[in-house]
Image (cartoon, rainbow, N blue to C red; front, top):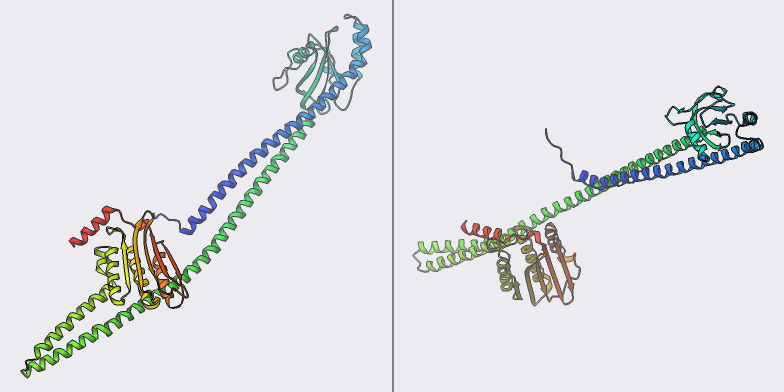
Length: 469
């Protein structure tokens, strides 16, 4: 099965969206957790406040009950059964709300007062626990013995017969060994808390959904923006490619025209002269003229000139010294020919490269030097040219300076095509091209990055191979 590789655009989209998705996911998790923790804290605070309000209410109720039987309890002895009976009657009559009542257990566990659930009266409930295993009667008696306090457990609600959570407050009447208390069902509190928790959970879920929707919208925006940029870049790339193709074709036609002119104006004329000279020598030989040898010498000289001209044209197209010895010797040969042809004082300085530039860099720098010297020859009216080429920690640099009149329209005019050629060559190498021009002259500086410098052992092996070949 063939493995499908991602396109460049898909990789860019993933690189753009993956951090966004991860960041939004992390934000969503953090926000959700923090919201849940904050909500839970607030809900617990609400529950605590509601229960505290219920407890304060219980204390008030129990204060009323204590006041109602205060005179009876205060004037009776520990064994006054009549007073106890009167007190139980008073407490049994004190009902409040739908489920509110007072209860009394003696310290042995016997129920004495339970007006809402009379079936409990007169029975011993020591050891009674609710359905969760929480002790009820024994815990109430223990709390009463220790001075009073609160106790929470599940109990049957008189109005509905259903089990609900109940908070009780109990005190001890130590002379009579009674545990007197009352309780309030807090199912309404628990329901309020449960509703608040459900609302909070719904809000958190809604917030999470909103974050997800925002993330999806952002991803769609990134995708659409990337698609539009991709289409725009593709159109620009197609335009540039079309322009580059036209430039390549124009350059090829220009080079072909130049070579054709060179062949026609030099080689062709020389060979025609050699042909006439040889024909003249042949006629003179047939007639026995002794001057035929002079014509043969002229023909040989003409052929020698044709050979030199062919070598010159070949060197212009692709100098062999560039491949064999490297950029420095090739530039020296180019500069020597430029000096001899133009009479301009030309100085050349270089640091030995040991042929360490790769082929692309050598060709590009050589052609840039060739183009720059051609511009100097045709347009600069310079009397002095200086060429430097050297390597450094960032790569290699070629610098050409002249003292001519400078470029009147940099990037355009007569030198526009040459400068574009230089720029395109250096762009292909990810290098930089600087052109500084003034009335005192022009400087062209081309630099190629270190990636186009070969390791020393590789350059030596390449030179040895070429020598052997």
